[in-house]
Each structure stands twice: as C-alpha cells, then as structure tokens.
Image (cartoon, rainbow, N blue to C red):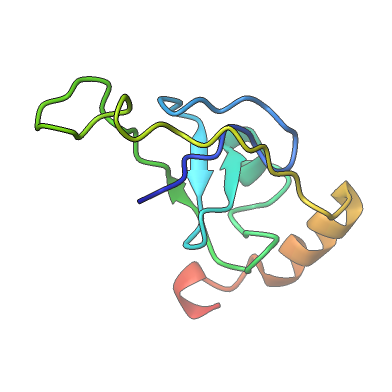
Length: 102
C-alpha cells in the first residue's frame, strides 16, 4: 500500500492525500507537479526513473475497511539530500533518455 507522503521532497510543498499535484516514481519518491516539470524534468533525482500522478485514496468507504479513514496517509515529511544545483545537474544528464529506457 502506498504511504502517501505529505510533502514534495524538493520544495516541501504540502501534498495532502487527495492532492492532484502529487507525483511519484516507482519507489514512491514524492514531488509536486511544479518541481517534476520544472527542476526535475520528469527525472526522479533518487532513482533516475520517471513520474506518474499519485493515486488518490478514497475518502468514502465504498467497501468495508477501504478508505483514508482506515488507511491514513503518512505524516512523515521527507526532503531530498541534494541541493538544487545537484538536482538540476543529475536530471539534465539523463532527461533525454525515455523513462522506460533509463
């Protein structure tokens, strides 16, 4: 089950569980749309993969035990260890390679 991290790892913008601005890579690294499209250029600075929109966990329990109430989002904030220059340099170096070929 996805952890649904509460923030962008780059700019620390709040990304609540129902945010349509949250993007994740295959390792659940979480970044906002502005950072993914601007600074990161669709390159995860942690694994080199691409991003997809993060799914939104249902508010309403349509099936017993399946909703945000029963499976809350994480409250642990995660921030990248890289500075903006390092992020830009890494992402620039592999952005031309399609995510499926990285």
